[in-house]
Every structure is written in structure tokens, then in C-alpha cells.
Length: 277
Image (tube, rainbow, N blue to C red; front, side, top):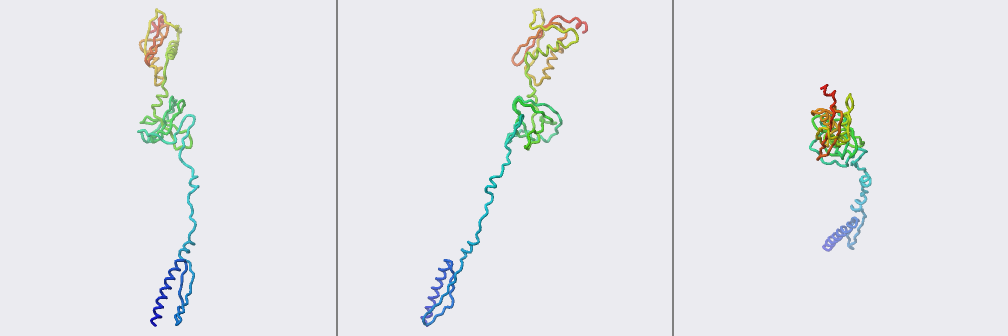
């Protein structure tokens, strides 16, 4: 009897170890109908079973790839810059002026022509330099601000974020600046000499020795033509001398360090002029 008990214990250990070994290989072993007789006959039944690993494998599905070529094909929305005959707009904004939010002022209609003698910067409403007016081109500026030295015009280039382009008023002074020559002065003085209702004077190419001289100096550069005409008028009539009071003239001009010296030679006082004074 003692011998059989020991045999059962030993057999149980062997079966347990075998079950563990087989389970690792994907087979579950089930011991049934164990009968120990005098002849130590043992019946063991085995049952195949899928392991958890195999079951998990069946649950794996393909992973969907998101993005890929579709994302790479997405078009960029970055502004690449633009231009027309008169204006260039940059792809990226440049420096910002100290004047911020220049759009936030009252702009009144004041149509002027801006003629660029060099590239003139243009700005957006926040004061960022966004492009320039091309040297040699002409732009019509429609509005000028109240309280600040800025003007603006509608952006003529479509497909941009700028409704208006802004320029500083100083550019108008620069664009209207003129340089006068001795020939210009002679032409204006000659016009004034001939602008009278009585007998026209004689204008000589060179002065004679018996002529008196009237001399004045004016700058060779003016901010605009109006100022130049005002100066010529002043020296023709309003400075104690009048080009309408004599019958014979000669004009000479000399360039002198950024100025022009003008000499008006004259003689033959018009008699009726004296009587009417």
C-alpha cells in the first residue's frame, strides 16, 4: 500500500511537469480517467488548444497610414511677391516704421501725382515696409491723412492682403524737386520782358558797354516749379527793378556753388513808363 501511494505522488509530479512543458508549445494537456491498478496502468488523454499568443495574432489588423503624399502635395499659401509696371511688393515684410497703425487716421481726398526719381518705399497700414514704387514710374495718390505726414492709394495689384499702400509725404517734395539752369532763367526773364501791352523790348545776345547791370542770385535746386517761378517774378518786378521799364536788355548767367548768379543788363528807359509812375 505504501508503495502505491508513493507511485501516485511521483506520477502526479510527472504529469504536472509534462502539462507545463506542453502548454508552452501551444497544447493544453488534460489528464482524465487516471486509474491505478495492481498493474500500474495509467490512461492519459491530450487535447489540442490554441494558445493566447496565437489568438492575439489573429486580432492584429493593418494600420492605416495618415498623411503621406496627400499632405506633401498640399499647396503652400505663402505670398511669393508680386509687381506691375509701377510697383513691387515683397514676399516678406521688412522693417516697421515707428509710426504704427497709420491706417487708423482720417484720410481725405487729395489727388496728387507721385513721380519717383528713385525707388520709393510703400508701407502697409501697420507701418511695415512691404514694397516700393519703381524708379521712373508715376503713381496717382488719392488720399492724405489728417494729423500725420502720410498719404495712401488703393493697391492696384490683385491677390494681396493690402487694400491700401501708404507713402510718406516727404516723397512728394522729392519727386517734384527741380534743378534749374541758366537757360531756364533766361527763358523766364525773357517771357516777363515781353509780357507787356506796349512796344516790345530788344534783347541782345551780349551786353554793350553803355548798359547798366542788375544782379541777383538764386538756388539751382527748388522743391517745386512754383517756388522757382515766384523767385523769377520777385527779381523781375518786386525788388526795386522792373523788366518792363526799359527798351533794351541782355541777360547773362553764371553757375556758382549750387547757385546761379543772374545779371540783367539794361538801357533806354521807356519814357511813358516814367510818366505813368
